[in-house]
Image (cartoon, rainbow, N blue to C red; front, side, top):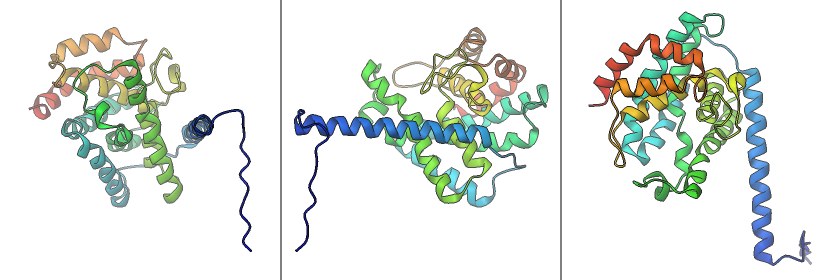
Length: 261
């Protein structure tokens, strides 16, 4: 006869529904801890490799980015601009601070920046495509796109093996909503405890958000966006990244003019 396993409930004083909810919450905490641990390992051991990603890696990067694009046409146009802005800022940073960022790393940061919002594939349309201001509960759900994206890329890394392109994509995906003063998410990292690629993409991402028209807002002018980023230097943004951004603001405007229309 086949033995039927006995299920021992962890807390029989709870209703079955409440216990299931409790176990699901525990699993979510464990998942977030795994993402944090994997991401910390990535930050500590990211390799440096020269040049553009090999064709196989670039195909994966573009393919994954297309998933995000398929959810929202604005996202697709946004990704193209982000890659241009990020590459310009990273290039300027490497020229101003070559001891912190080599020119050979710039193409890696630029290429993988398009994956910064890949986690939005796991956010429901009722939130992602909501034309109104999100409630605090909806915004908390939206924040999960950073961890969802990191989890997707960590799983990819486990299959492909570690390489600088996937590692950099994980850093950017998880850290591009952190803030210099530690008030960002998902971990509240302060200063350079957040990784440099994510700090660069944070400026590119906000500039694009400010200068892009959405159903719920009009686009700001280039000068208005510049003023806001300057004001947020040292609070939202890394001051050295802002310095680099301001040094090529005319080039940023050229890209914006070409790709926003």
